[in-house]
Length: 580
Image (cartoon, rainbow, N blue to C red):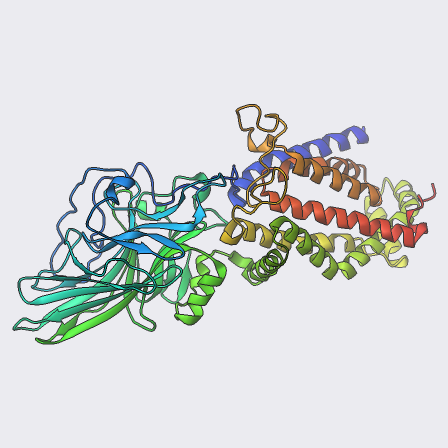
Protein backbone atom coordinates (compact mmCIF):
# COMPACT_ATOMS: atom_id res chain seq x y z
CA UNK A 1 0.00 0.00 0.00
CA UNK A 2 2.81 2.39 0.91
CA UNK A 3 4.57 1.64 -2.38
CA UNK A 4 1.43 2.47 -4.35
CA UNK A 5 0.97 5.69 -2.42
CA UNK A 6 4.61 6.63 -3.04
CA UNK A 7 4.23 5.91 -6.74
CA UNK A 8 1.10 8.06 -6.98
CA UNK A 9 2.80 10.86 -5.04
CA UNK A 10 5.84 10.76 -7.32
CA UNK A 11 3.71 10.78 -10.47
CA UNK A 12 1.51 13.67 -9.27
CA UNK A 13 4.57 15.67 -8.19
CA UNK A 14 6.24 15.10 -11.53
CA UNK A 15 3.11 16.04 -13.47
CA UNK A 16 2.70 19.22 -11.43
CA UNK A 17 6.29 20.24 -12.15
CA UNK A 18 6.05 19.37 -15.83
CA UNK A 19 2.73 21.10 -16.49
CA UNK A 20 3.23 24.01 -14.11
CA UNK A 21 6.65 24.81 -15.52
CA UNK A 22 5.15 25.94 -18.83
CA UNK A 23 3.36 28.77 -17.04
CA UNK A 24 6.39 29.66 -14.93
CA UNK A 25 8.71 29.67 -17.95
CA UNK A 26 6.46 31.97 -19.96
CA UNK A 27 6.15 34.32 -16.98
CA UNK A 28 9.75 34.43 -15.82
CA UNK A 29 11.88 32.99 -18.67
CA UNK A 30 10.34 34.06 -22.01
CA UNK A 31 12.19 32.56 -24.97
CA UNK A 32 12.08 33.10 -28.72
CA UNK A 33 10.14 30.59 -30.80
CA UNK A 34 12.33 30.64 -33.89
CA UNK A 35 15.95 31.51 -34.72
CA UNK A 36 14.82 34.32 -37.02
CA UNK A 37 12.16 36.05 -34.96
CA UNK A 38 13.54 39.58 -34.99
CA UNK A 39 11.22 41.76 -37.01
CA UNK A 40 11.06 45.46 -37.76
CA UNK A 41 10.77 46.95 -34.30
CA UNK A 42 9.54 50.45 -34.99
CA UNK A 43 5.91 49.87 -34.06
CA UNK A 44 2.63 48.14 -34.61
CA UNK A 45 0.78 47.71 -37.90
CA UNK A 46 -2.42 48.72 -36.12
CA UNK A 47 -1.15 52.11 -35.01
CA UNK A 48 -3.37 55.16 -35.23
CA UNK A 49 -3.20 57.40 -38.27
CA UNK A 50 -2.82 60.72 -36.47
CA UNK A 51 0.55 62.35 -37.07
CA UNK A 52 2.51 62.13 -33.81
CA UNK A 53 5.24 64.48 -32.73
CA UNK A 54 3.55 67.33 -30.88
CA UNK A 55 4.89 67.39 -27.33
CA UNK A 56 2.38 65.79 -24.97
CA UNK A 57 3.44 68.23 -22.25
CA UNK A 58 4.66 71.41 -23.98
CA UNK A 59 6.98 73.38 -21.72
CA UNK A 60 4.66 76.09 -20.40
CA UNK A 61 3.95 77.74 -23.72
CA UNK A 62 0.84 79.48 -22.50
CA UNK A 63 -1.05 78.16 -25.53
CA UNK A 64 -2.56 74.83 -26.44
CA UNK A 65 -0.99 73.29 -29.55
CA UNK A 66 -3.24 72.46 -32.44
CA UNK A 67 -4.43 68.89 -32.75
CA UNK A 68 -2.13 66.86 -34.99
CA UNK A 69 -3.31 66.47 -38.54
CA UNK A 70 -4.47 63.13 -39.84
CA UNK A 71 -2.36 61.82 -42.70
CA UNK A 72 -2.83 58.94 -45.09
CA UNK A 73 -0.72 55.94 -44.15
CA UNK A 74 1.90 55.06 -46.75
CA UNK A 75 4.58 52.33 -46.95
CA UNK A 76 7.92 53.16 -45.34
CA UNK A 77 9.66 52.92 -48.73
CA UNK A 78 7.33 55.58 -50.14
CA UNK A 79 7.71 57.86 -47.13
CA UNK A 80 11.52 57.84 -47.15
CA UNK A 81 11.66 58.43 -50.92
CA UNK A 82 10.66 62.08 -50.40
CA UNK A 83 12.97 64.72 -51.87
CA UNK A 84 12.93 66.76 -48.63
CA UNK A 85 15.51 64.59 -46.92
CA UNK A 86 19.17 64.70 -45.94
CA UNK A 87 20.86 61.28 -46.06
CA UNK A 88 22.55 59.75 -42.99
CA UNK A 89 25.50 57.49 -43.62
CA UNK A 90 27.83 55.96 -41.00
CA UNK A 91 29.52 52.58 -40.50
CA UNK A 92 26.62 51.55 -38.23
CA UNK A 93 23.59 53.51 -39.47
CA UNK A 94 21.83 54.44 -42.68
CA UNK A 95 18.78 56.61 -43.18
CA UNK A 96 17.82 60.27 -43.49
CA UNK A 97 16.63 63.43 -41.75
CA UNK A 98 13.19 64.65 -42.73
CA UNK A 99 13.34 68.38 -43.53
CA UNK A 100 9.62 68.54 -42.75
CA UNK A 101 9.81 68.90 -38.98
CA UNK A 102 13.60 68.36 -38.81
CA UNK A 103 12.88 64.85 -37.56
CA UNK A 104 15.27 61.92 -37.46
CA UNK A 105 12.67 59.44 -38.65
CA UNK A 106 14.54 57.07 -40.96
CA UNK A 107 17.20 54.90 -39.33
CA UNK A 108 18.27 51.35 -40.16
CA UNK A 109 21.02 49.45 -38.36
CA UNK A 110 23.30 48.21 -41.13
CA UNK A 111 25.25 45.74 -38.93
CA UNK A 112 22.15 43.78 -37.90
CA UNK A 113 19.69 41.80 -39.98
CA UNK A 114 16.06 41.07 -39.23
CA UNK A 115 16.51 37.30 -39.55
CA UNK A 116 19.29 34.73 -39.92
CA UNK A 117 18.39 34.19 -43.55
CA UNK A 118 20.80 35.27 -46.26
CA UNK A 119 20.18 38.74 -47.69
CA UNK A 120 17.68 39.54 -44.92
CA UNK A 121 17.00 43.29 -44.73
CA UNK A 122 18.68 45.34 -41.99
CA UNK A 123 16.80 46.07 -38.79
CA UNK A 124 14.74 49.26 -39.07
CA UNK A 125 14.60 51.32 -35.89
CA UNK A 126 12.97 54.62 -36.95
CA UNK A 127 10.17 55.15 -39.46
CA UNK A 128 8.35 58.35 -40.58
CA UNK A 129 5.20 59.60 -38.90
CA UNK A 130 2.88 58.80 -41.80
CA UNK A 131 3.70 55.07 -41.74
CA UNK A 132 2.18 52.19 -39.79
CA UNK A 133 5.31 51.89 -37.66
CA UNK A 134 6.04 55.56 -36.91
CA UNK A 135 8.97 55.97 -34.55
CA UNK A 136 11.30 58.98 -34.50
CA UNK A 137 13.32 61.54 -32.55
CA UNK A 138 12.62 65.25 -32.69
CA UNK A 139 13.92 68.47 -31.14
CA UNK A 140 12.07 71.76 -30.99
CA UNK A 141 11.14 74.95 -29.16
CA UNK A 142 8.30 76.48 -27.25
CA UNK A 143 8.01 80.25 -26.92
CA UNK A 144 5.65 82.98 -25.78
CA UNK A 145 4.30 85.43 -28.31
CA UNK A 146 6.31 84.30 -31.36
CA UNK A 147 5.98 81.61 -33.99
CA UNK A 148 8.22 78.57 -33.52
CA UNK A 149 8.92 75.73 -35.94
CA UNK A 150 6.55 72.76 -35.67
CA UNK A 151 6.03 69.24 -37.08
CA UNK A 152 5.06 70.60 -40.53
CA UNK A 153 7.80 73.23 -40.81
CA UNK A 154 10.09 72.69 -43.83
CA UNK A 155 13.69 73.53 -42.95
CA UNK A 156 16.55 74.61 -45.19
CA UNK A 157 19.61 72.37 -45.09
CA UNK A 158 23.26 73.39 -45.34
CA UNK A 159 25.11 70.20 -46.17
CA UNK A 160 24.35 67.31 -48.51
CA UNK A 161 24.84 64.34 -46.18
CA UNK A 162 25.20 63.68 -42.44
CA UNK A 163 28.31 61.56 -41.82
CA UNK A 164 30.86 61.36 -38.97
CA UNK A 165 32.97 63.95 -40.83
CA UNK A 166 30.25 66.19 -42.33
CA UNK A 167 27.69 67.81 -40.03
CA UNK A 168 24.46 69.30 -41.37
CA UNK A 169 22.87 72.60 -40.34
CA UNK A 170 19.12 73.17 -40.66
CA UNK A 171 17.69 76.69 -40.41
CA UNK A 172 14.31 78.42 -40.39
CA UNK A 173 13.19 81.99 -39.66
CA UNK A 174 9.83 83.41 -38.63
CA UNK A 175 8.39 86.81 -39.56
CA UNK A 176 9.29 88.55 -36.28
CA UNK A 177 13.06 88.32 -36.55
CA UNK A 178 13.89 85.05 -34.83
CA UNK A 179 16.08 82.44 -36.57
CA UNK A 180 16.18 78.84 -35.45
CA UNK A 181 19.07 76.52 -36.27
CA UNK A 182 19.78 72.83 -35.60
CA UNK A 183 23.30 71.59 -36.20
CA UNK A 184 23.28 67.80 -36.48
CA UNK A 185 26.51 65.81 -36.11
CA UNK A 186 26.99 62.07 -35.70
CA UNK A 187 29.72 59.67 -34.59
CA UNK A 188 30.68 56.32 -36.09
CA UNK A 189 28.26 54.39 -33.87
CA UNK A 190 24.82 55.45 -32.64
CA UNK A 191 25.07 58.92 -31.10
CA UNK A 192 23.64 61.98 -32.87
CA UNK A 193 24.26 65.46 -31.44
CA UNK A 194 21.78 68.27 -32.07
CA UNK A 195 22.87 71.83 -31.20
CA UNK A 196 19.74 74.00 -31.07
CA UNK A 197 20.19 77.76 -31.48
CA UNK A 198 17.62 80.54 -31.34
CA UNK A 199 18.96 83.92 -32.52
CA UNK A 200 16.86 87.00 -31.85
CA UNK A 201 17.15 89.74 -34.45
CA UNK A 202 13.85 91.34 -33.42
CA UNK A 203 13.30 94.57 -31.52
CA UNK A 204 12.12 92.96 -28.26
CA UNK A 205 13.36 90.16 -26.04
CA UNK A 206 11.69 86.76 -26.37
CA UNK A 207 11.22 83.95 -23.86
CA UNK A 208 11.84 80.48 -25.23
CA UNK A 209 12.49 76.91 -24.16
CA UNK A 210 13.86 73.94 -26.09
CA UNK A 211 12.87 70.31 -25.78
CA UNK A 212 13.62 66.86 -27.24
CA UNK A 213 11.41 63.83 -27.57
CA UNK A 214 11.13 60.25 -28.79
CA UNK A 215 7.72 59.49 -30.30
CA UNK A 216 6.48 55.96 -30.95
CA UNK A 217 3.26 54.88 -32.61
CA UNK A 218 2.20 51.43 -31.45
CA UNK A 219 3.86 48.71 -29.40
CA UNK A 220 6.24 45.99 -30.61
CA UNK A 221 4.21 43.17 -32.15
CA UNK A 222 6.64 40.32 -31.54
CA UNK A 223 5.29 38.36 -28.52
CA UNK A 224 8.83 38.06 -27.15
CA UNK A 225 9.27 41.85 -27.24
CA UNK A 226 6.68 42.21 -24.47
CA UNK A 227 7.45 43.39 -20.96
CA UNK A 228 8.00 40.52 -18.50
CA UNK A 229 9.31 39.80 -15.02
CA UNK A 230 12.79 39.23 -16.38
CA UNK A 231 13.05 41.56 -19.40
CA UNK A 232 11.80 45.15 -19.46
CA UNK A 233 10.55 46.40 -22.82
CA UNK A 234 9.06 49.89 -23.10
CA UNK A 235 9.71 53.35 -21.63
CA UNK A 236 12.89 53.63 -19.61
CA UNK A 237 15.62 56.04 -18.62
CA UNK A 238 17.68 57.45 -15.79
CA UNK A 239 15.06 59.70 -14.22
CA UNK A 240 14.72 61.35 -10.85
CA UNK A 241 18.08 59.94 -9.80
CA UNK A 242 17.41 56.27 -10.58
CA UNK A 243 17.05 53.81 -13.45
CA UNK A 244 13.37 53.47 -14.35
CA UNK A 245 11.93 50.06 -15.29
CA UNK A 246 8.52 50.37 -13.63
CA UNK A 247 6.63 52.24 -16.39
CA UNK A 248 5.19 50.14 -19.20
CA UNK A 249 2.85 50.57 -22.16
CA UNK A 250 -0.12 49.29 -20.18
CA UNK A 251 0.34 52.05 -17.59
CA UNK A 252 0.34 54.66 -20.35
CA UNK A 253 -2.73 53.12 -22.00
CA UNK A 254 -4.56 53.52 -18.69
CA UNK A 255 -3.81 57.24 -18.67
CA UNK A 256 -0.88 57.24 -16.26
CA UNK A 257 1.69 59.97 -16.98
CA UNK A 258 5.09 59.78 -15.29
CA UNK A 259 6.81 63.13 -14.60
CA UNK A 260 10.32 63.72 -13.28
CA UNK A 261 12.28 66.76 -12.09
CA UNK A 262 15.57 65.51 -13.54
CA UNK A 263 16.74 63.28 -16.37
CA UNK A 264 20.05 61.76 -17.39
CA UNK A 265 18.40 60.20 -20.45
CA UNK A 266 15.05 58.67 -21.42
CA UNK A 267 13.45 56.83 -24.30
CA UNK A 268 12.17 53.42 -25.35
CA UNK A 269 13.96 50.11 -25.08
CA UNK A 270 13.34 46.90 -26.95
CA UNK A 271 15.16 43.70 -26.15
CA UNK A 272 18.11 44.60 -28.38
CA UNK A 273 17.52 48.22 -29.46
CA UNK A 274 17.30 51.62 -27.79
CA UNK A 275 16.09 55.07 -28.81
CA UNK A 276 16.76 57.81 -26.26
CA UNK A 277 17.21 61.55 -25.91
CA UNK A 278 19.98 62.85 -23.64
CA UNK A 279 20.44 66.40 -22.30
CA UNK A 280 23.89 67.96 -22.01
CA UNK A 281 26.08 66.62 -19.21
CA UNK A 282 24.99 68.08 -15.88
CA UNK A 283 22.07 70.00 -17.40
CA UNK A 284 18.92 70.30 -15.29
CA UNK A 285 15.74 69.43 -17.21
CA UNK A 286 12.24 68.18 -16.47
CA UNK A 287 10.96 65.03 -18.15
CA UNK A 288 7.80 63.05 -18.78
CA UNK A 289 6.62 59.71 -20.13
CA UNK A 290 3.11 59.97 -21.59
CA UNK A 291 0.61 58.71 -24.12
CA UNK A 292 -0.61 61.82 -25.99
CA UNK A 293 -3.06 59.82 -28.10
CA UNK A 294 -4.39 56.30 -28.40
CA UNK A 295 -1.59 53.86 -29.24
CA UNK A 296 0.93 56.72 -29.26
CA UNK A 297 3.74 56.93 -26.68
CA UNK A 298 6.19 59.70 -25.99
CA UNK A 299 9.21 60.40 -23.80
CA UNK A 300 10.21 64.07 -23.55
CA UNK A 301 12.53 66.36 -21.65
CA UNK A 302 12.24 70.16 -21.59
CA UNK A 303 14.42 73.01 -20.40
CA UNK A 304 13.33 76.03 -18.41
CA UNK A 305 12.36 79.18 -20.28
CA UNK A 306 15.15 81.68 -20.86
CA UNK A 307 15.05 85.23 -22.17
CA UNK A 308 16.83 86.00 -25.45
CA UNK A 309 17.63 89.69 -25.73
CA UNK A 310 17.65 91.49 -29.11
CA UNK A 311 20.89 90.75 -30.95
CA UNK A 312 21.63 87.70 -28.76
CA UNK A 313 21.30 83.96 -29.18
CA UNK A 314 21.04 80.87 -26.98
CA UNK A 315 22.38 77.41 -27.86
CA UNK A 316 21.49 74.16 -26.14
CA UNK A 317 22.79 70.65 -26.85
CA UNK A 318 20.79 67.45 -27.09
CA UNK A 319 22.14 64.00 -27.83
CA UNK A 320 20.11 61.25 -29.45
CA UNK A 321 20.96 57.57 -29.13
CA UNK A 322 19.48 55.39 -31.87
CA UNK A 323 20.93 51.94 -32.18
CA UNK A 324 21.80 48.55 -30.75
CA UNK A 325 22.38 48.01 -27.04
CA UNK A 326 25.96 46.87 -27.42
CA UNK A 327 27.41 46.48 -23.94
CA UNK A 328 30.80 48.09 -24.58
CA UNK A 329 29.30 50.89 -26.71
CA UNK A 330 26.85 51.82 -23.94
CA UNK A 331 29.62 51.70 -21.34
CA UNK A 332 31.84 53.89 -23.52
CA UNK A 333 29.13 56.53 -23.91
CA UNK A 334 28.53 56.32 -20.18
CA UNK A 335 32.19 57.05 -19.50
CA UNK A 336 33.22 59.38 -22.32
CA UNK A 337 29.96 61.30 -22.79
CA UNK A 338 28.93 61.37 -19.13
CA UNK A 339 25.54 59.74 -19.85
CA UNK A 340 24.61 58.45 -16.41
CA UNK A 341 23.97 54.70 -16.29
CA UNK A 342 23.20 54.38 -19.98
CA UNK A 343 24.38 50.76 -19.74
CA UNK A 344 21.33 50.11 -17.54
CA UNK A 345 19.28 50.24 -20.73
CA UNK A 346 20.12 46.52 -20.60
CA UNK A 347 17.91 45.21 -17.82
CA UNK A 348 20.40 42.93 -16.10
CA UNK A 349 18.16 42.60 -13.06
CA UNK A 350 19.17 41.57 -9.55
CA UNK A 351 22.16 39.54 -10.69
CA UNK A 352 23.84 42.40 -12.59
CA UNK A 353 26.94 42.05 -10.39
CA UNK A 354 27.21 38.46 -11.64
CA UNK A 355 25.70 38.64 -15.13
CA UNK A 356 28.05 41.38 -16.40
CA UNK A 357 31.25 39.45 -15.52
CA UNK A 358 29.72 36.32 -17.09
CA UNK A 359 29.03 38.32 -20.26
CA UNK A 360 32.52 39.80 -20.38
CA UNK A 361 34.18 36.43 -19.90
CA UNK A 362 31.92 34.79 -22.50
CA UNK A 363 32.47 37.63 -24.96
CA UNK A 364 36.26 37.41 -24.47
CA UNK A 365 36.19 33.66 -25.04
CA UNK A 366 34.11 34.17 -28.17
CA UNK A 367 36.63 36.67 -29.52
CA UNK A 368 39.42 34.19 -28.83
CA UNK A 369 37.86 31.09 -30.44
CA UNK A 370 35.46 32.63 -32.95
CA UNK A 371 32.55 30.30 -32.13
CA UNK A 372 29.96 31.22 -29.55
CA UNK A 373 29.03 27.59 -28.82
CA UNK A 374 32.63 26.66 -28.16
CA UNK A 375 32.90 29.77 -25.95
CA UNK A 376 29.93 28.53 -23.87
CA UNK A 377 31.61 25.14 -23.47
CA UNK A 378 34.87 26.80 -22.38
CA UNK A 379 32.94 29.02 -19.97
CA UNK A 380 31.37 25.90 -18.46
CA UNK A 381 34.81 24.33 -18.11
CA UNK A 382 36.12 27.45 -16.31
CA UNK A 383 33.11 27.52 -13.96
CA UNK A 384 33.52 23.82 -13.22
CA UNK A 385 37.21 24.42 -12.54
CA UNK A 386 36.40 27.19 -10.06
CA UNK A 387 33.80 24.99 -8.41
CA UNK A 388 36.05 21.90 -8.33
CA UNK A 389 36.72 22.02 -4.55
CA UNK A 390 33.00 22.36 -3.82
CA UNK A 391 32.19 19.56 -6.25
CA UNK A 392 34.79 17.37 -4.56
CA UNK A 393 33.09 17.92 -1.22
CA UNK A 394 29.76 17.11 -2.82
CA UNK A 395 31.14 13.91 -4.30
CA UNK A 396 32.78 12.91 -1.04
CA UNK A 397 29.55 13.46 0.85
CA UNK A 398 27.55 11.49 -1.72
CA UNK A 399 30.09 8.66 -1.63
CA UNK A 400 29.85 8.55 2.17
CA UNK A 401 26.10 8.42 1.87
CA UNK A 402 26.50 5.48 -0.49
CA UNK A 403 28.71 3.59 1.97
CA UNK A 404 26.39 4.05 4.95
CA UNK A 405 23.22 3.12 3.07
CA UNK A 406 23.01 -0.33 4.75
CA UNK A 407 23.08 1.33 8.18
CA UNK A 408 20.46 3.85 7.08
CA UNK A 409 18.18 1.11 5.79
CA UNK A 410 18.62 -0.82 9.03
CA UNK A 411 17.60 2.25 11.05
CA UNK A 412 14.60 2.90 8.82
CA UNK A 413 13.48 -0.69 9.20
CA UNK A 414 14.05 -0.70 12.97
CA UNK A 415 12.11 2.53 13.58
CA UNK A 416 9.62 2.34 10.74
CA UNK A 417 6.76 2.90 13.19
CA UNK A 418 8.45 5.76 15.03
CA UNK A 419 9.32 8.49 12.51
CA UNK A 420 10.64 11.06 15.03
CA UNK A 421 12.99 8.46 16.55
CA UNK A 422 14.01 7.38 13.04
CA UNK A 423 15.00 10.95 12.12
CA UNK A 424 16.83 11.35 15.42
CA UNK A 425 18.86 8.19 14.84
CA UNK A 426 19.63 9.19 11.24
CA UNK A 427 20.94 12.57 12.41
CA UNK A 428 23.11 10.77 14.98
CA UNK A 429 24.42 8.48 12.21
CA UNK A 430 25.29 11.48 10.03
CA UNK A 431 27.15 13.04 12.95
CA UNK A 432 29.05 9.86 13.83
CA UNK A 433 30.06 9.27 10.20
CA UNK A 434 30.85 12.99 9.64
CA UNK A 435 28.35 13.25 6.78
CA UNK A 436 26.60 16.46 5.73
CA UNK A 437 23.43 15.36 3.89
CA UNK A 438 23.00 18.87 2.47
CA UNK A 439 26.49 19.07 0.98
CA UNK A 440 25.24 17.60 -2.27
CA UNK A 441 22.81 20.51 -2.70
CA UNK A 442 25.45 23.26 -2.51
CA UNK A 443 26.68 23.03 -6.14
CA UNK A 444 23.06 23.05 -7.33
CA UNK A 445 22.36 26.19 -5.28
CA UNK A 446 25.46 27.85 -6.75
CA UNK A 447 24.43 26.80 -10.26
CA UNK A 448 21.12 28.70 -10.00
CA UNK A 449 22.59 32.26 -10.19
CA UNK A 450 25.08 31.08 -12.84
CA UNK A 451 22.27 29.62 -14.93
CA UNK A 452 20.11 32.72 -14.49
CA UNK A 453 23.00 35.05 -15.33
CA UNK A 454 23.74 33.07 -18.48
CA UNK A 455 20.03 33.15 -19.34
CA UNK A 456 20.06 36.96 -19.07
CA UNK A 457 23.23 37.19 -21.17
CA UNK A 458 21.75 35.00 -23.91
CA UNK A 459 18.39 36.76 -23.90
CA UNK A 460 19.51 40.39 -23.57
CA UNK A 461 22.89 40.99 -25.16
CA UNK A 462 22.98 41.86 -28.85
CA UNK A 463 26.46 40.36 -29.07
CA UNK A 464 24.93 36.88 -28.65
CA UNK A 465 22.06 37.38 -31.10
CA UNK A 466 22.08 35.16 -34.21
CA UNK A 467 25.36 33.48 -33.22
CA UNK A 468 25.69 29.96 -34.74
CA UNK A 469 27.29 26.89 -33.22
CA UNK A 470 27.46 23.91 -35.59
CA UNK A 471 25.31 21.80 -37.91
CA UNK A 472 21.64 22.78 -37.53
CA UNK A 473 22.19 25.21 -34.61
CA UNK A 474 22.22 28.60 -36.37
CA UNK A 475 21.26 30.79 -33.41
CA UNK A 476 22.27 29.87 -29.87
CA UNK A 477 20.09 32.61 -28.39
CA UNK A 478 16.99 30.85 -29.79
CA UNK A 479 15.57 27.37 -29.04
CA UNK A 480 16.73 24.27 -30.90
CA UNK A 481 14.94 24.57 -34.28
CA UNK A 482 14.90 20.79 -34.87
CA UNK A 483 11.85 19.00 -33.43
CA UNK A 484 11.11 15.28 -33.44
CA UNK A 485 7.34 15.79 -33.73
CA UNK A 486 7.55 17.64 -37.06
CA UNK A 487 10.30 15.35 -38.36
CA UNK A 488 12.94 18.09 -38.07
CA UNK A 489 10.94 20.56 -40.15
CA UNK A 490 9.71 18.20 -42.88
CA UNK A 491 6.15 18.60 -41.58
CA UNK A 492 4.85 22.16 -41.78
CA UNK A 493 3.84 22.82 -38.18
CA UNK A 494 5.50 23.98 -34.97
CA UNK A 495 4.88 21.77 -31.93
CA UNK A 496 3.67 23.43 -28.70
CA UNK A 497 6.48 24.47 -26.38
CA UNK A 498 5.76 21.60 -23.96
CA UNK A 499 6.35 19.06 -26.76
CA UNK A 500 9.00 20.97 -28.74
CA UNK A 501 11.55 18.25 -28.14
CA UNK A 502 14.76 18.42 -30.16
CA UNK A 503 18.13 16.64 -30.23
CA UNK A 504 19.73 18.99 -27.69
CA UNK A 505 16.96 18.37 -25.16
CA UNK A 506 17.27 14.60 -25.69
CA UNK A 507 21.04 14.75 -25.13
CA UNK A 508 20.39 16.80 -21.99
CA UNK A 509 18.01 14.12 -20.67
CA UNK A 510 20.45 11.30 -21.42
CA UNK A 511 23.45 13.02 -19.80
CA UNK A 512 21.39 13.90 -16.72
CA UNK A 513 20.18 10.28 -16.50
CA UNK A 514 23.75 8.99 -16.68
CA UNK A 515 24.83 11.49 -14.06
CA UNK A 516 22.05 10.41 -11.69
CA UNK A 517 22.94 6.75 -12.25
CA UNK A 518 26.41 7.42 -10.84
CA UNK A 519 24.98 9.01 -7.69
CA UNK A 520 24.08 6.90 -4.65
CA UNK A 521 20.45 5.86 -4.68
CA UNK A 522 18.14 7.64 -2.28
CA UNK A 523 16.72 5.51 0.50
CA UNK A 524 13.23 7.03 0.41
CA UNK A 525 11.04 5.29 -2.23
CA UNK A 526 9.38 8.55 -3.31
CA UNK A 527 12.78 10.20 -3.85
CA UNK A 528 13.91 7.16 -5.81
CA UNK A 529 10.97 7.46 -8.21
CA UNK A 530 11.36 11.23 -8.55
CA UNK A 531 15.08 10.91 -9.36
CA UNK A 532 14.31 8.23 -11.94
CA UNK A 533 11.95 10.45 -13.91
CA UNK A 534 13.58 13.83 -13.18
CA UNK A 535 16.03 13.69 -16.15
CA UNK A 536 13.16 13.12 -18.55
CA UNK A 537 11.08 15.85 -16.93
CA UNK A 538 13.96 18.28 -17.35
CA UNK A 539 14.30 17.16 -20.94
CA UNK A 540 10.81 18.55 -21.66
CA UNK A 541 11.18 21.55 -19.34
CA UNK A 542 14.41 22.75 -20.95
CA UNK A 543 13.44 22.05 -24.57
CA UNK A 544 11.94 25.54 -25.22
CA UNK A 545 14.96 27.34 -23.74
CA UNK A 546 17.73 28.91 -25.79
CA UNK A 547 20.03 26.34 -27.38
CA UNK A 548 23.00 27.99 -25.67
CA UNK A 549 21.55 27.23 -22.24
CA UNK A 550 21.05 23.58 -23.17
CA UNK A 551 24.61 23.45 -24.47
CA UNK A 552 25.86 24.85 -21.16
CA UNK A 553 23.87 22.29 -19.16
CA UNK A 554 24.91 19.35 -21.38
CA UNK A 555 28.57 20.35 -21.08
CA UNK A 556 28.18 20.70 -17.32
CA UNK A 557 26.61 17.23 -17.09
CA UNK A 558 29.40 15.68 -19.16
CA UNK A 559 32.05 17.29 -16.95
CA UNK A 560 30.23 16.04 -13.84
CA UNK A 561 30.16 12.50 -15.25
CA UNK A 562 33.88 12.69 -16.07
CA UNK A 563 34.69 13.96 -12.59
CA UNK A 564 32.66 11.17 -10.96
CA UNK A 565 34.35 8.53 -13.11
CA UNK A 566 37.74 9.99 -12.20
CA UNK A 567 36.93 9.81 -8.50
CA UNK A 568 35.68 6.23 -8.79
CA UNK A 569 38.91 5.23 -10.51
CA UNK A 570 40.96 7.02 -7.88
CA UNK A 571 38.99 5.50 -5.00
CA UNK A 572 37.56 2.18 -6.22
CA UNK A 573 36.02 1.45 -2.82
CA UNK A 574 33.58 4.30 -3.34
CA UNK A 575 32.07 2.60 -6.37
CA UNK A 576 31.55 -0.70 -4.64
CA UNK A 577 27.93 -1.47 -3.99
CA UNK A 578 27.06 -1.18 -0.33
CA UNK A 579 26.69 -4.44 1.52
CA UNK A 580 23.19 -5.72 2.03
